[in-house]
Length: 134
Image (cartoon, rainbow, N blue to C red; front, side, top):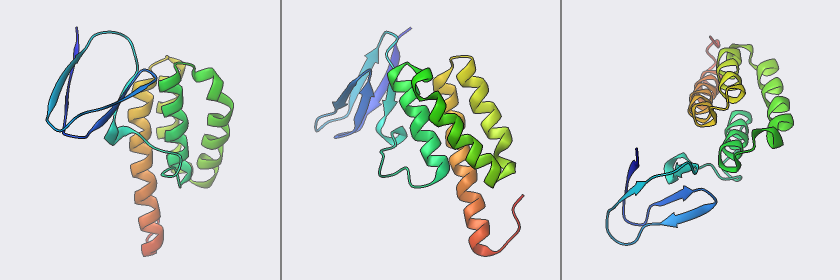
C-alpha cells in the first residue's frame, strides 16, 4: 500500500537519501516502497540538537535514515546512559526507545524519542520554575 503525503508549498521531505522540495503549490505524493521518509517538521538538524534528549533524537534519526542502527549504537548508548543518570525519570522513555530499536522498528523509536524530548522540555521548565521534578 502506498503512503500518501501532502506537501505545502516549499515544504521539504526526505525520501531515502534525497531531499525533495515542493514547488509553489500544494502537492500530493504517493510513495510506494521501503525507503525511509521524514517530513520537514520531523527533521532535526545538528544545530537544533542543543539538549541531551535532542541529541538522542538526532542519533535515532540517523539510525532511521541510514538504515544501519548498529553504526550509531555506541553513541546512542552513551547518550541515553548520561540522560538516565541525570534524570532517572526518563528511564521508561529510554526503555521504550531501546525496545523499538532492538526490534528494528526505528521509526517507532523516533516517535518515542519525540516524547522523550517533550518530557525533557517539561523537566527543564519545572527546573527553571523551581518546582520539583516528577
